[in-house]
Length: 513
Figure 1 (cartoon, rainbow, N blue to C red):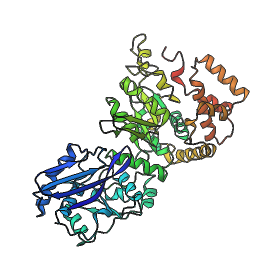
Figure 2 (figure 1 turned 60 degrees about the vertical axis):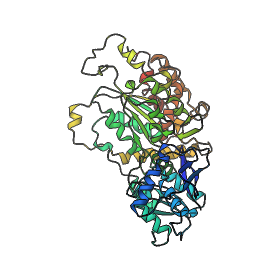
Figure 3 (figure 1 turned 120 degrees about the horizontal axis):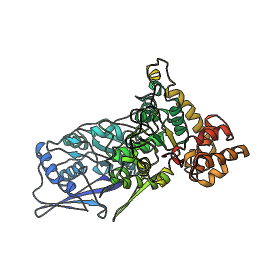
Figure 4 (figure 1 turned 45 degrees about the horizontal axis):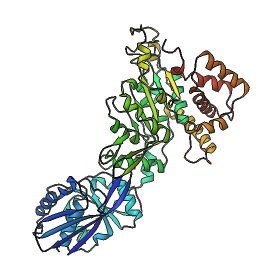
């Protein structure tokens, strides 16, 4: 007898329908076909142990399991549950009241028949709805994630026995319903770190406000203990809230990577990723024989923070150049090319020199001649070219630390950032995939960032006197446009340009002596 149901395989952040067929015929042996990897083939042992645990029998005949289409590689242990149910149906041990073909079924079995959570549930649920399936039977721990998708019955099961009695109609399992919108809007403004707890550093807060308002990349340069990491961790709290489409896309990426955790639902806050400087190329941009999203994709719609930037391997930093421009990363393998979104804000920090005290107001730098420049040269020019703001962070004085005066809260800063982003949304509404000043092309900079004669004179003098490089020109104009947006100004004034110029520290020819 032939039994059939459906599962799914995830490639990139999208799911593909997989047909699971089982036939029991005369002969002996267990055969699995359809380009299955070792983890899928090992399901035979898990399925057999689970069936015996609930007093069912593994057929002692020729058993063929086909996973179609046969030219797509299937990986992982999530096919255990559909294979087990198909084996029971094909061997006539299952009296189906509900048709297996009406559902997408996924889940990993333990030897005692309990179900373990799987990865990539959200893309699978979206595909199930798209294909018109009645429901999605899956492990209970993944049900909240799948319930984000409406108009499909999400059936949570704890064990193989629960799935069997549901299919046989002996037990009704109520589909899990989640009020996604309510859950999303009530938790999207909850952040642990707030700028009101930061004493002093008003100039750095201002720079980070500009960074958030325009979606710019920024680097903070300062001695150890000046507060660079502390400030960076507070940036997500001043970014505009995620929209529902952004939240859904972000959740899909985290689902595929298995980062959502138990009973997780929609990601409602902007991600903040801070990988260690020992990270590999593949871990940062994504990869592997079966490509998985890397840190830059996990930071999609949020912040990627690289602490101690010069300590990262140069090859790791260089692979970020293309994603920073295209806001996506393509990973090619012999059989497939997978694309992951990677629209993130890069926030980096670094010491000014190996000892950390170059340009320190009190402590003396002990680095030898040329060492500071050599340290800075660990970061390539093309990468610096993609960073709009270079901010020098100085240590906070005792009086500022001991002050009881309350600083401006993240909520107050965020309100200004949201207003500036609304201006940009209006400005770029006719431009495809452009919605912030940082994303402007050189042609758009010439069209939008128009400055007067006084502004041109100031910019010319600054470039000559400070030795600013040519690549700083467009960056200054973009940042000054954001400063004007924060000031609710339609034109870029001289004071906006003057402020933008001071955020190009590393472009000055004499910066490292």
